Length: 404
Image (spheres, rainbow, N blue to C red):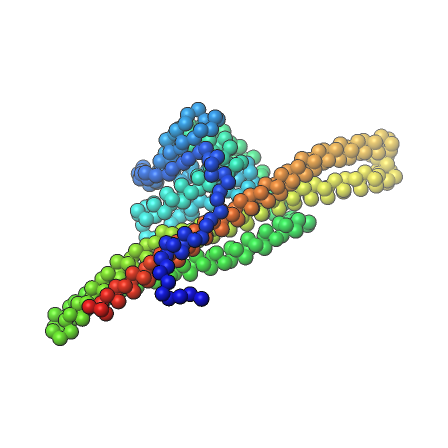
């Protein structure tokens, strides 16, 4: 049972909660900082670039330190390339491109700083990933000057190639999968449930922050009312001024508490709302690969049935067309045999691809869960610590007024 007389500070309470140590921490060999945002105005657009500083001991880099400037579109390009090359690895989400609801000025200081922090986390999550951090696209992003990056981007697949991939993905998505492994059904159910919960928390927390900011503005007008009143109420002047002073000090504590909530809890919750959407996309891409594999197997089965069902009717039609029946049968069988062999080769490759996709997602799923739980645990504990600190300080403010 909790004893009210126990002197328990918020800091000591939080320090009792130990996080799992990252086994890869000692082997970290890429350190990235995103800072120093700069605004650029051209005749057709206004945009922000960020400095990306990289320090590394990896041998594949020519130098140990790099400094480049990147805009949001460059980060978006990198994310797309990583997802294209590793369709079932979980690439950390970027902040939304457009302004969140309620933000009046697109490039105000708060918006830029929030985006900077998110871009910093995005790159460091990639740097910590054992596979994504080895990507050539990632290396180029960190080391190439702006004009070199522009040239490198043009070397990618053409529009028609990308369109073909998109058409195949849509077709596989429409077809769907018939025999999804049970473990991926479980992951999908978890993601849907997690998405609903984190989205609800995100919305409620943002609403609370909005209401607390409105309350703070009311509080700032509340104190001066007592001060003004004290000038015309001599018998109550001391008490009225005391209440005004308490409200003023509470305003400062409330402002700090609201700021902490806005800077600590809100970004993490919204980040994992985006993560949930990323996970749904990864699961869809895994399903698309399996759907293509299943479709090729169905096509192979159909071809085998066609080959086995070569009948005399085919020979009759061959005769009517002026062909030797046996020759027509032989030609068709050769064509079907060739198509069957091609399908077998494609199926073998797709089977390997499905296996790789499944293993990649299973491995990354565990990594993502550990990261998610660590991030949310840290944010929740930090919020709890700040709330305790806030209520202790405001309680003390009013207690001191009572003992004057």
